[in-house]
Length: 176
Image 1 (cartoon, helix red, strand yellow):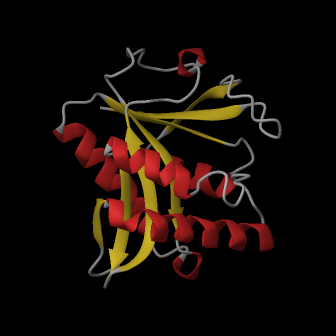
Image 2: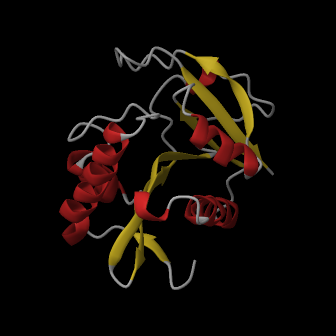
């Protein structure tokens, strides 16, 4: 993909980033909603607003059009200590990738991998030792993407997030 810019989301872009996520969720609802995202709930303008204020929300653009979004921070947002991690690390020594979404019109064109490599470079340059993440166990497209990019499975666990339709999450890690 050419001319892609990956950068932090600005406060003035919260609403359009929320709309981007809503469009992705509508598309998922009309095909297969592997991540079990819920429109206007997660991810949403409210979650984008919180992540933007934290400095963790990123967007991918081509000529000012949002074609991807994700959050990257050090907050696992759940009981990651339950994972079967190959490299036990204390909280704060790894980054966590959340809510990675790409424009349905350009699926399978490498943007997901480009985002992952951006996150790896960012985490390494800031001295973190790994990236971790969680996915719904039957989110096969995400699992394939992460495994293709070097992530290893670290077990299915109850993160105690109390999300009724998602009792367990599959954990993944990439250590260096």
